[in-house]
Structures are given as structure tokens and as C-alpha cells.
Image (cartoon, rainbow, N blue to C red):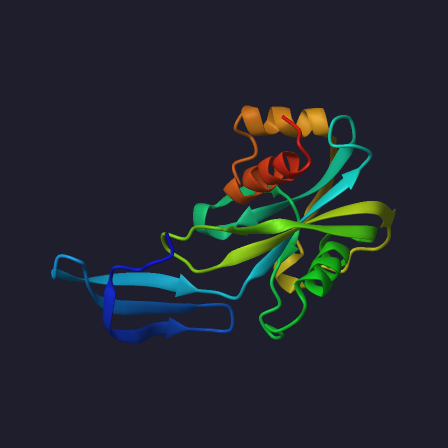
Length: 186
């Protein structure tokens, strides 16, 4: 499953900034036909599931923020990447992003796995962690996150929000599904 049947003929950077690189590759497919493939390169990120209590009857912390490309506000698990320190330990990034966005400090941080956001158009994936034994402190959002609103919801409410299509962030939904699968639930 990991073999790439396409041959890269050439590759060029179309656009680049601090957060991303847009690359366009000229490719040759298995049948010899040629084409282009454009995609976004971004550093790996983290996503944190802040859980109080149990996954059956506990509560979760979500952030609500504007997602500019679609012009709407959404609920999602906290997370992010450190573009200026791409080699940082993912667990360190997870602790930092959790504190920055929510003010929460995790007494326990367990690695759940690794997923990709949208591998049809980007190489960016995310390390998933579950934060437990939470202590509330002061959030310190960066300038791009000044509109964040913190929400605490019960697990039951969270799952209803997912079922009802209120939570539309696929990474948040997938993260919860993976966490439950790893714990042998649902």
C-alpha cells in the first residue's frame, strides 16, 4: 500500500510562506500518461482531546474559532503546529498548544496515534493526544487565535453535536473515533 506508482518528472514551488508551501509536480502515471499534481506541504501538527472523567460519561473541552476559508465558526479539539520549531517534540507541542488555546495543563498526556488532515491535497498530518488530570489556568492565545472561545461539553453532548452535524471538523470527529477505538469503546 505504500508504493507510489507515479513518477515525479519535475517539481516546483508555486508559493511559500511561514505556514505552508504550495508545490506543483509534473508526474507520469503508471500507464505513461502525464499530468500535474498540486499539493500543500505543512509541518505535522498536534490535536489534543482534553478529557475529564471517562469517555463514557465525562466531559470534553473544545475551542470555537473562525475558519477563514469557509467563513464560519466551528467547534473542534484544540491543536496546532509550531512553524518556527518544526523539530520540536510532538508531546511538547501538545502541552504548549493545550495551554495556549485553553489555559489547561495536563497532568497526564497519552499518545493516541497519528492521522492525516486531507492527504488528497496536503501532506500535513497530526499527532493525537488525550489530556487527562486537567488543571485550569489562563489561556494565552497568539494573535491569530484571539477569537477563540472555550467550551466544556459532556461526552454525550459532544457525540450529539457530531451526529447532528454541528461539529463539522473531520479531524475532530476522526480523533474521537480513533480514541474510542483504541480504548475498545463503541
